[in-house]
Length: 194
Image 1 (cartoon, rainbow, N blue to C red):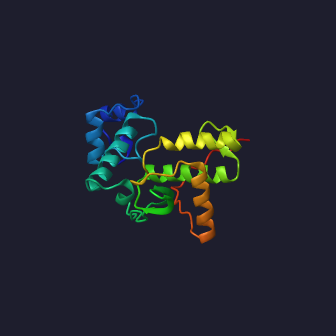
Image 2 (tube, rainbow, N blue to C red):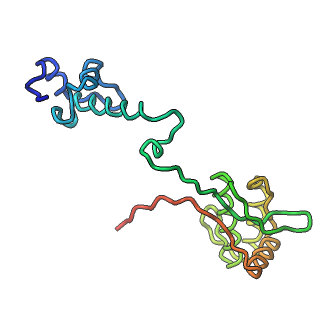
């Protein structure tokens, strides 16, 4: 339908500037958009009519989505069926052991990654604190012990907070050929600065 075919009052209301963001379009314009009188072809960007058309399009798409579906599933893409996996050095009565956890939550997976990165940095003698300060030697060992002795269990398992025990377990895992698994969720790429 061409804009000239619309009633004059509807044409005027549709061509007004849009309301501030977050406010719904007028009910009259929304009904006209739902009925198909207002379309993307006969409204201009930034007008109240275009906002009503966009709102009606969103409502149609949202109605097709089943309750509980994700946006990804509504678009026809399958859900990611990949289980979250992480490795830790778990504390045991006789010292500790290398342990791979499956189906851990995202928070536990990230915490396991931070823990293993700290063990790796400790082994390289370039331990980095959460504040970004690089420590070496005894200062690094003291900070590691104080930091990880306060941590909650990861995946129901207590972690080795003793720096010497963690380093010994890391060496044993490397010699045994155990693969340290940390299936990291993808990070959002950072903006490049010139």
